[in-house]
Amino acid sequence: MNQPASPVLPAKKWTLQYPELGTGPLPHEPNISSAYFEKEREKLFKRTWLLLCREDELPRPGSYVVKQMPILETSVLLVRGDDGVVRAFHNSCRHRGNKVVMGAGEKTGDSRGFMCGFHGWTYDLQGRLTHIVDEEDFFDLDKCALGLKPIHCDTWRGFVFINAMDTPRETLAEALGDWGREVEAFPFENFELVNVYSANVRCNWKIGLDAFQEGYHALTLHAKSACEPFVSKHNPFAHLLYVKLYPEGQRRASFPANLDFVPAPSVQHAVKYAGNNVYAYQDGHTRNLPGLNPSGASDWSFDINIIFPHVQFLASDAFYVTQHFWPISVDETYWELRQYLPKCTTVSGRIAQQNSQAALRDVIREDLVTLENTQSVLRSGAISHMQLNDNEIAVRHSYFKVAERVNAPD
Ligand code: FES
Ligand SMILES: [Fe+2]
Image 1 (tube, protein in one colour):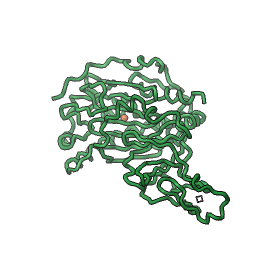
Image 2 (cartoon, rainbow, N blue to C red):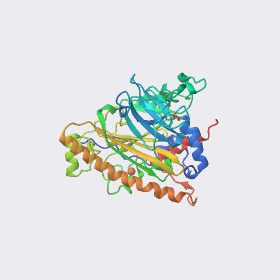
Image 3 (cartoon, rainbow, N blue to C red):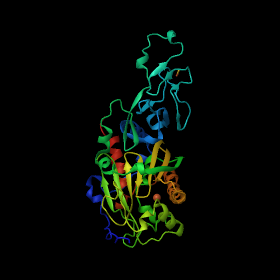
């Protein structure tokens, strides 16, 4: 049986707990200013641990992933070495700089090493330079010093992060801080990747992220697709059940559930046979996997986490999602969504997975529509500020933490 819902949440419960954020309107300037974007590049993205992918995307020695990263003005080669260690390199040859793995877009594969297609310099899986065509015709080359240029790389719970600084100011564990310690028990290994969506979107990366770190819009934008499961008579405006903002930049919020919601029969079947639907809380109890639902509320549906600065990590008992908002320019963003569901081996489980994929797709399509509709009118300057309510506190925190980096002394 469903447990009773938590009492109606008062308005303006969260923001006043973080007085440094203020309560006033926020300027749109950071979303349209090229100068601000360049500061974000130099002072934020080039100096921060950035989440790239899951480690299991590089399953064996020789597995590699290449990511084009305009915000770092480079291309990154991730490769698992013979020793099993995942390393990151600038995908740029030490001879004259050509991409060692050429081409645009993301590339994945398995290799025994990398030969630059320009003049044939060859590197092994640890990035060491192993062969130079006509080596004797060069002058005083120190081959040992000419391996691929490494990028700092570390992992947390199977996620691969990089830091482009020569000497990072902090370790990955320090950068993740208490957020990392509080969420690390989540059983990522029990989930499998079922779906990837990506698109180049003509909006600032923050406009993209903003749309996925508040639930205020569920009442309107998702009125038909995803309002009823979350909005209840106890909590008619989908006020957040829990909010925690971390000094390192992470943030975490819990989204409510409507325990009176009765899903469609197809969804009820999906829940019954696989429990992997977004509405799995409807099976009569709140299971709360480790690392989730920090307030322990019974009418909880999922947690929204932001892994600073640009990744949303949405997690529930029944699914998790990562969304990357990779900046390309001040008004262009590469968006990538990855959906993970509990591993299953049965036919009914697979059908249930399809059900979950369709549900998420419909909601995400609605979210994406707002991004270019917002960005395209901002440049006029007619609307210079945004008004944020208490339920949008994560948006406020996001701009605050970005500005902190952008305005910090060098
Ligand atoms: S640039 Fe790579 S071998 Fe010449
Ligand atoms: Fe949404």
